Length: 369
Image (tube, rainbow, N blue to C red; front, side, top):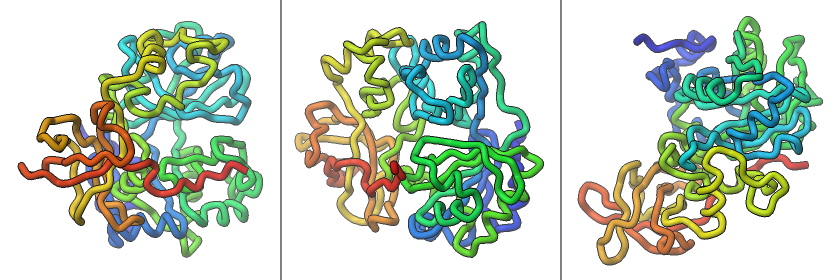
């Protein structure tokens, strides 16, 4: 099957993007500057990311709250209009079907942003369990992310009302006369904004943003290294249907009111197992690692203890440009998950010393007011 192109494809090619297939789309891995420079540029200036490949799903209906709370372990009654949360779709077995951002657009209307590779199955999942709401992919809208230290400087000039938002809040706005929906969010660990806009105005809007000499396109390679430094999961790698939110160390994505003792405890798919894990612990857990030497360890590498016994596996690994050192994430047995635990990653048959480290590896810069 042919790969799709986002609305920005020609813009990426014109900017000398290195295009490659990703989740059914031709996407820019990097531009001529290269991944490391793009990564550091985002940390110190502003980077623009094409995230049109991700799914924007609208759910409308008077039973939207009760219906969604059966599938997503959050308290939607507590979510205000134009506020958003990070959470997951859980499975009946307690695994993670996908991670997502849910935004309350109106009393009975919610927007879900889901992963590109999962959006069709997510849509099917929603329609299987929810029968009394209107559920659809948001038509003819593009999504871009403006991230980095100077993103708020740009937004202060272009859409001051958006620049005053706190992290995980949104508003309707316009930029140079172009209507859009802006949230203060992103997946880089940096302060920034995500902008949903009608396809017909998307390229024009991107040109307004790129007119700033300190803003440039950033590819998927740097997006991945930025989220790794921020200690954020990549679905299908750092968590999947075989790992629970507790094992993935994202128990915080489950609202306290949905946990044991809360006023809305349980009631979501897999809740019996997941709530039991909160109380009784897990056998494995996602942790971060710092790696000895300069070369990175990669996904799939076995992790061993001092006796050479396999105790886990690397799920994400790479060079951290901000840290100027290799870092990784992976799962290890609970007894080996304490910060400072010294283990080995097996690389080409040889042990590489690694140490369990606190995440995020780089301080997150989310604006909380």
